[in-house]
Amino acid sequence: MATRTQKFKAFVSEPMGDKDVTAVDGINDELALKLAAKGFDKAYILLGQFLLLKKDYAVFQRWLKGAYGASPSEAQRCASCLMDWCYAFL
Image (cartoon, rainbow, N blue to C red; front, side, top):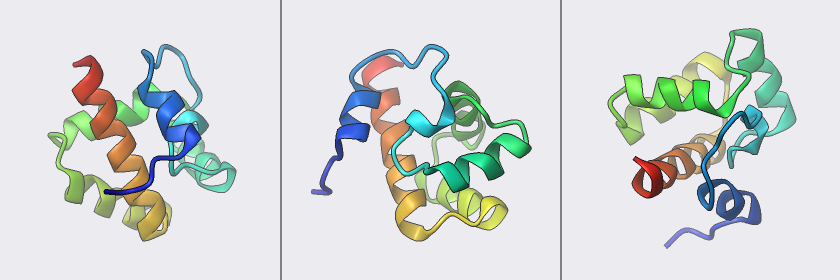
């Protein structure tokens, strides 16, 4: 099982509300700037993309790596974080 960071635990422990995209595990400041430049400045907007991709873990990771240059680790952590949030709140 993957190690869950404090950031991951904090994000999946409560509704996301209006949290910044940097609240999502796997999204650092550099990646957040790239995402925000294309309109993905809030966690719920990134979640929307995840849902548009039908919660497909692999497709979302490929999108994040290909479109925004996320590392494989960043993409995996982000997808896991959003998936676990969905399990908890949807």
